Length: 224
Length: 221
Image 1: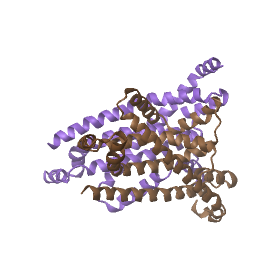
Image 2 (image 1 turned 90 degrees about the vertical axis):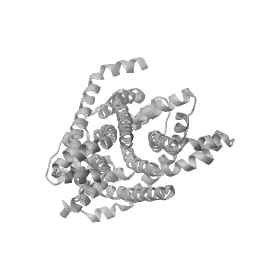
Image 3 (image 1 turned 120 degrees about the vertical axis):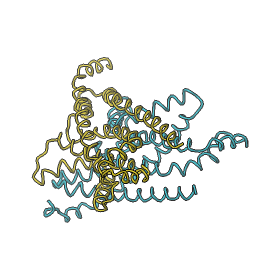
Image 4 (image 1 turned 45 degrees about the vertical axis):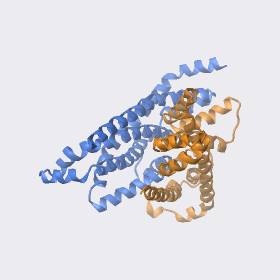
């Protein structure tokens, strides 16, 4: 009996790979857009503008305090009510981009605040303007603090992208859910889905660990 | 949208939301307790001298961390019956939450234990304490202070993760929003109300985190 199911599963492998492509598309697009937005928000959050800081802080709190599933349902069902028709795919990308931006914003803000204030003062007295300070002094130094948790956050976001299957995006989780109706062997089907995620996420986790070790070595050496 | 926001219907559905709120608290509370046990066990195995135990814990932790909770949940939900094991939705959900958060807690506890200076362990060994006495009286009490803030952070994640249990049709907060959407077609009211309840839990846990962090700083100085 198992042999029969495994054969069936091998036959539907292209379907799974298509789903994997969708997962990669959703998370790739959202991570790229979320990184850009997250860096902008993070820089604003670490700046002195009190109003913008509080605004972003409150929004980040709301997003971090509610489940992603609730967010995605809200976006998917709410936008039509205010007159914007959304397909499942753009709704998923918008929701995941927003989530990514909020988490990355926190990481970036923490990284910028970790740079000693003497650096900024020195940059100011050298006559660099605000943008130059950021570009040549602050960001290059904060990258060492930002990079390891950023890669770790990417892993979490790729895993969160599985939730978009709930609004019908045909990602690899959704493919597993559809397949299990036909091949009633949950262990096999979702084992395969898990392996596909594992192939993407495990190397990224290792990269994050590696980065953490390398960056902290540099940091202690710099301190001495 | 806001001019059509219907508070009357929200009030009408409030009993449902409250009972679902309790269900979320109960499910994530049970998941957290299980995860604590699982985390301690996995952490103990991970740092043990026996290669086999350590290896097994590593495989468990890494395979959980590299796959989404939703896939793990479906794995148990669809997979256990095909092994002839029938469990209720609630126990399947708690099992998935336990195993998922347990892996993260194991890493958090391990980081806490490793943050304790090695001299403490050596002193405990030379006072003649055995493994359990060392853990119970020397290592863990000191590790708890460092572990508490990230542990509460994981509790926040766990509460949010419990929303996924609505996808195996457990009646909890997100499910209440779905029910309201399907019965009255009021997604805005339904999901925003769920969100408010989640935010209540989030702010409570977040202030606890701040409190434990302040306490930690106080203890260290």
